[in-house]
Image (cartoon, rainbow, N blue to C red; front, side, top):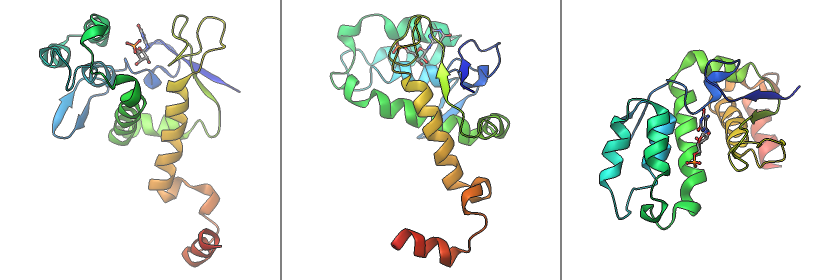
Length: 170
Ligand SMILES: Nc1c(N[C@@H]2O[C@H](COP(=O)(O)O)[C@@H](O)[C@H]2O)[nH]c(=O)[nH]c1=O
């Protein structure tokens, strides 16, 4: 069963980047992943003062509004780095908050889809044909957490460390 998420106050709303789960990255505090993601459009760009404005934005919607304005001021490599920035923010979020990490792991192998009616890159768009990059990142993070926390890795539970190493080497 595919799990669709989008609005923070709807089921699986904690998967949205707008959910109020702060993160610390490189000693810097961000109120939400959305604040972190939007601010990074301006790192090394022509208008670095936007970073502080986005960091202080009262809501993730406000952070997005500032971040989406003036695309000509974004860093020139934004399209190259945005997937990595998003992955880092989302991984940090689910590593930092045990309650939502448990919700993520409880989804097993279900497909996760950001059900945005307007975004065909991060979400699936109105007709659900979009790329769903955010859903893909969250599924990747789910697997990453299982690898980092072997107690969640049910596939490996039955075999010993020696057996696992042999499997990896062969
Ligand atoms: N959840 C959610 C949104 N979706 C988020 O917007 C971000 C993409 O922004 P951009 O790259 O600037 O188009 C990304 O984090 C995506 O998950 N947008 C919204 O306006 N409202 C919302 O409730």
